[in-house]
Length: 83
Image (cartoon, rainbow, N blue to C red; front, side):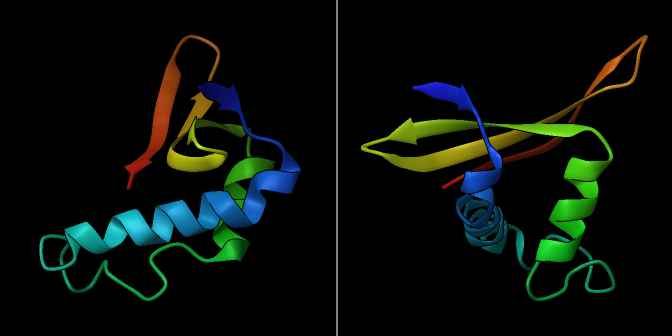
């Protein structure tokens, strides 16, 4: 099931992003890679800046998340991660 994420999903969103990002280690330039890939502070910033997250749920847990931001004339896919 795909559903819009809520604040209560924050920790699970962050876990999916950081677990999925490990697949890109070695492909993302070293000067752009950091641990964790996304901090809780940055995720809060993104959410505060109008990025809404949607989650793909399987067996009660997220298997993927996507962050979408409406910018008026365009809608941006800002983040997309799957386990």
